[in-house]
Amino acid sequence: MAEAITYSLSLRRRLLRAMLSAAGVLPVGLALNYALNVALARALPVDGYGLFAYAQSLASLLSLVASMGFSFSMMRLIATYQARADMALLRGLVTTSLALISLAAVAIALVLLTMGWVLPEYRNGLFWAAMLLLPLTVSLWRESSMRGMHRTATAILPRQVFLPLLTLIGVLALGMDDTALVLATFLGLLIALELVGLLQLRKTLDFLAAARPRRAVRKWLGVSLPMGLAALATLGINRWDVVVLALVLGLDAAGPYAAAART
Image (cartoon, rainbow, N blue to C red):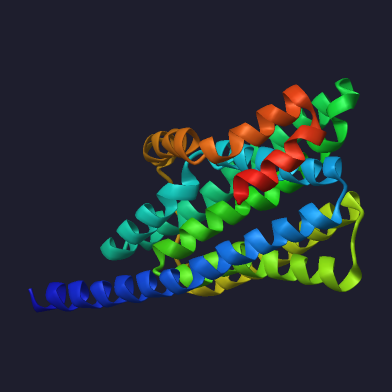
């Protein structure tokens, strides 16, 4: 009984710290993302900013699909297995879910590249969306996993703070006005930051090294897929408009719309 009370108090303190850190970091991330988009809208041609907004929006939507709901369920499942001290299932969950979402992201990226080959008018947008898809999918999975370990600030800092900050510095310092160069810089920074984030996650999960993994894939998917569908229906609303507008009216229309919508 005493151990249960101690664990409950410890958990409450960790959750409180996570909430407070998120409350401090998230507004900074939102401000930096907005500043980056303002800078890009001014620096790039209209269709160039439309291409950036379209590729980022499409990749963000499809990363929700590729993550199969693990981008939300990991925080719940990891916390559950940790509370039960079930290290075997926890290790199996981490390794198996990462493999599943990576394979799904690669498969969807290949479909996008094939579509770009067949539809040359959409080739650039589909190409960059395909390139962004895997690191964005891994980022969603890593963030959810770190949140399950009650490390919210560590989870969201790489993609939501450092990525827009470093991209913004690059755009302003180097005077970038080429869309391909901006997208390549954004992609390179995203990959580098996610590699660092994965190393942090691996270090956090070092205590699993001795555990022999067990898997419950059907159960995990049963929890994750409904959560993924709900996220796609709700969070996806903020992205579908830019994607549809670019497909119907072109990147010239998507650029000003994306800038206005963010404002």
